[in-house]
Length: 95
Image (tube, rainbow, N blue to C red):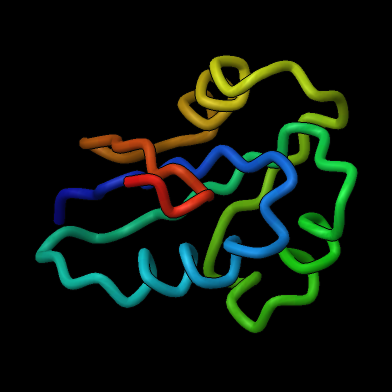
């Protein structure tokens, strides 16, 4: 089966991270789905929320440690992705 990697770069997204991950996990697709969250050095509660979320075992979670920008977070996500197709999903519910 073909796999879709959904890369979610996140920086200080404590208000929206749960909702976006739940939406992505519940979205319907005929493809196998791999969700990769890249935290880009958040200074709010984003990391704690992710690490304690009920869906943590269903996603790949990578911490950049330092804020290096969205582009670096996306590149890190691509390095960790194994899908045949890859998309970027904004953590702030922008799109």
